[in-house]
Length: 207
Image (tube, rainbow, N blue to C red):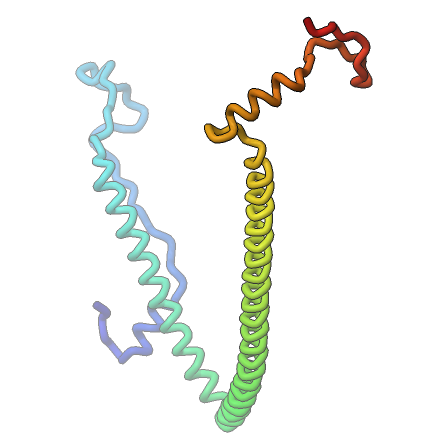
């Protein structure tokens, strides 16, 4: 992939070197630039060759991937070169800094573990409270349903008692003759008029 001349440093140096401008040699044909168009080519319209959209998309994706890979390689080589240069220049300072960073990392990890433990305890307490609150609401809902059921039963009992009282005045086959005699002995006149207050103002006499 790379031309090895003096090792990897030469390859990295070539990759990190600034790109020079592309030199294009001017090529002239058999006719000068000022010559008119040939008569055989007058009126000809140049049509660009057809481009396959699928192929164009694939080529664009591959070119983008190529650029990304080359950029990543350049950055990787540059980082390696700079790291080696930094290590050579700093020496023991780099080791001391790395040791301090390791200690700081351990301290931060310990603090993070403590915070995680504290948050876990708080989360357990919150979940327990939520569970107790849900259980309390369930008990209250059960009590409410029981009370509503008891009220419904009492209401049904009152309706049954009322119907039993009203059933005493029902006309049956056993008391049919008796009710007919009572109606004949105590006739009622429903042919009357009332005012807005519900008082009888006019009533006809029974014949």
